[in-house]
Length: 140
Image (cartoon, rainbow, N blue to C red):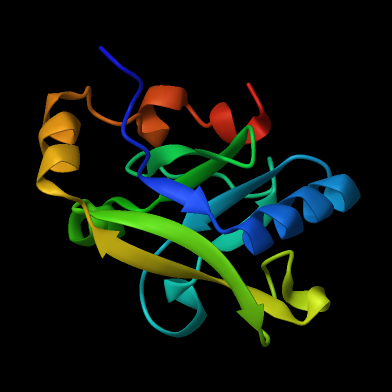
């Protein structure tokens, strides 16, 4: 089978910021939890400082080897959409690494095409935190 359909990507500005953050903080990871306020924005953490839950879903890797995790509840809503992480001026959560930069990550989305959805339906289930025992956010 061909490579997996990409579920998440970074805008060029977000990719540049992730690479700069990784240069400062070491390997990083994303987690999208859902909810209101800053919980609806993707959070960027030093890899290993945020432990994913057993039900969290690994949507893919961005900026090379940066894992992008999403809570199972949020994935249930967004499973039909392709996500693009972008960066805009403004302050987000105090816990995400980009906050001191005066910018924040946000998600832009579009519904998968029929062709993409057909391909996704034939792909294996995405890995979860239970499958990885938390190893992927530590770089294993």
